[in-house]
Figure 1 (cartoon, one colour):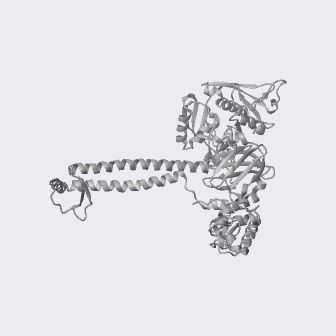
Figure 2 (tube, rainbow, N blue to C red):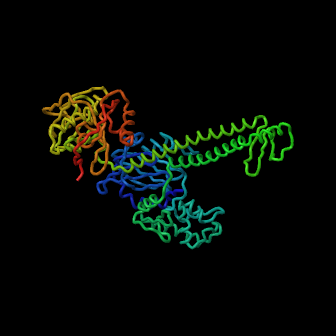
Figure 3 (tube, rainbow, N blue to C red):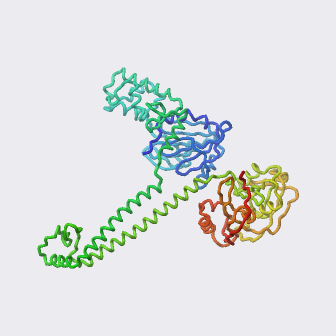
Length: 592
């Protein structure tokens, strides 16, 4: 079973890592099984903080964070919030992160674990809503900490003595009443007190030594970590692997264990059922074969049972059910004396057939799990490029073209990536994305492709347009400055000066696998851009087939994750125009 961090471990972790947290800003939050918070600070850059129920907090590897579902709600609340403090209330297995905005995240690391978001100490959101006597995790309620043991960091000797009561072993009292968990045995050893000694039998000197040892143990925690006999420790205990930061000990521990996934658990259960059903099916089949192969003998037994004659091969009889065995090599057979042996044999064959159907169903379930795992592995293995956050394609002239996915990324793509030598492209229709064309020695050909791209991801696609217009302008013509009395909303831009129009552009996109920096990646772009990069691609246009069905077909054609396919398709139904298999001259595509 996976262990969790103890109170001393958490205390040590905060000592080592609070500097990376306090004063940093929240850039993203993704909440699935774990909460991952991307923090940014001037001194330490981006770091991903993992809160993993029931009981692990650590900085882990940076990964692609896709904000969707309830993660969007959490991002809206905390995005760009500055961290004021990180604390461990009452030395309990709780971590609290407070923000200057009045918001807070509380990570309860006991039981099943819980992650709670607060505003002015009232509950906005919780991973799990629960209620106890005197305490409730409910939306809108004031957050209360659970009843906790004595805080050993702040306790004095008198408070310590007040907890030494009852007919209990001292090791258990130290573990539970002072929140020291398995470190209680170390405290007993360092204090020179037998761990199984009863509290009532302790001498005054022993009590003083235990108190002083607890204080010394806690004051000695400095943020370092150890792996001792496979257990995470915040102090060295025997032969241990040493780490300057306990966070690295946590990562090493998590890397060394393998937690069974939900799919693996289901697969294990299904395989167990599979073996059971196979054995039972074989038993029923052999019993049916036994009766049919020796039908005359069983007919005679059946007649004797009905006449209530003595039968040497009878094992037992209970009402209308008799158990018989033809000889030592034959199986025991249950005979219902209200049915002919041939009917009973047929019943056994029928049961065997039913089990075979169940076996077939289980095999299908296991097969689906295997396919899902393979897809997950493929998705996990693929490198993600920074530009995949946006709409994108590589033009036929090998220029990177970026477009926003929504108002936020429309703003970002222009502010961050429109350089002085680049071009801004926009479809001549309301509800189209901002398109940025990086000027890497391009001609009008790339600008036309960018215009087609912008049209395909505009409202023109959903409306079923077959063609439309777009225009391009230079960097200096794009501004956020509105005329007096006007307002420019988020994601929108003011264009000044002449617009260079591109008329009657055809709404068609090609989709195919390309190579980029030695990685295979699925790209959606104007057909001419695909022609230069692959010999196999699919062409789509506005139509009546749902986006989901189009994605399913493309996913199967290219053996690609369907979620990735959905993310690159235009917004609305379409149709597959054709599949192209043709020779092409391979281009660089960003490779050296």
